[in-house]
Length: 259
Image (cartoon, rainbow, N blue to C red):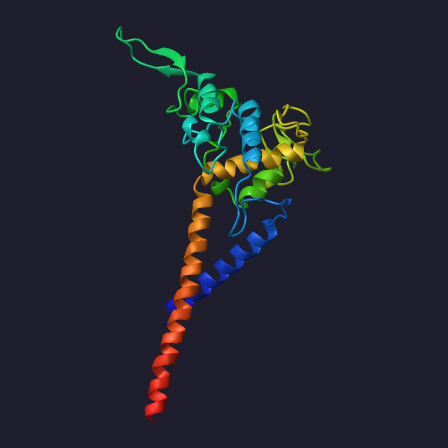
């Protein structure tokens, strides 16, 4: 009995400390209006297309998206580029293939069936090019980070000079939304770093929202279908509840009349 009491006491103290640590680390992230939030949420196609542009021109030089294929860019529920546009995007990349008849590897233009081209050949090459840090794959990054889209959106805008008393090593930057406030990645975005084809002003805030939306789609490509299924399920349950209610009411009315 004493052992059980001690175990309960230890678990209680551990839970209390964990909750205190979590509360201490809780951060108020920047907020924005996400079109895909809520029961009827949908991805904005123009936002997804701009987000892909930001990823390609800014992020893809370091971060991979190994679970995406170029054909996904034209599929329903995603950026929905035309098939011709998606083929042109794929063809703009050189893909290593082979071996050929001579047993040698070769490069060719990308095809819709190809996965997104990786920026580095392997993990060691990525670390060597980034001062020992490994740029994480972005395919499911939104789901892998606490805070989700709000965290990524805030992180991209959270670079600032360190407060007094905080010293940073070479190649380390201060970001108020990063865990521990220290990050090896320099600020990737600056106003006008990309030129949007639709004329949208490429501010840091706008690019942060666009690329974060694109990353959300990459992590949940079937989000819209899931929302539609959830809505249908709710309607079905409401109708079923009404039918059950009236059925039970009719049954009990007969019982009361017999009494």
